[in-house]
Image 1 (tube, rainbow, N blue to C red):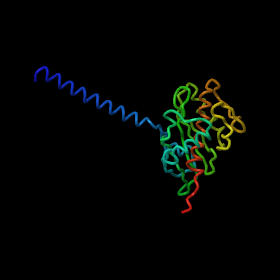
Image 2: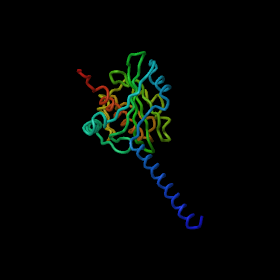
Image 3: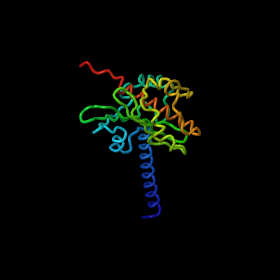
Image 4: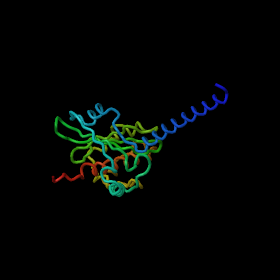
Length: 220
């Protein structure tokens, strides 16, 4: 093989390699286009967040599948803010954990991603059949104050709250009334992440109301 043949072979290999890298990168971008939120260890976490459970089933939903643009506009209206970024696209896959005691449905666990001051935050709530918060859990938070906000004492302030309570929280201004007003921030230096956690909780409850609690049973 002469020098020109070596050169041509090298160019062909380089072209193939670049094409493969571009394909892989494009595939990665597509996978990151809609960021879902799952429990890291469902078997362990379900047992911890819903101690009376004996099993669970996962259901996957998205706004695009359930209601499309009209639902997105309704969710944004109820939230009082627009959806934006990878965490809040119309096709984000949401994982709803249906919780059972033997064969009886007793509640749900659902989490959402939320942009925090320094990175993503994952906020989960367990809910009874009436939509009341039974447990509050921040699975992920990138912040030097994460320990305080992930502490069980902070999470206990959310117990018993419903979407009606969070209707009195303005996610843009941070102004609150009623039961939300008395939730204390354990890390005043992390005000942005505190507000992000509250926004995530309100978004979580709105989505669950849209996906589960507000769904009318079929008459057929």
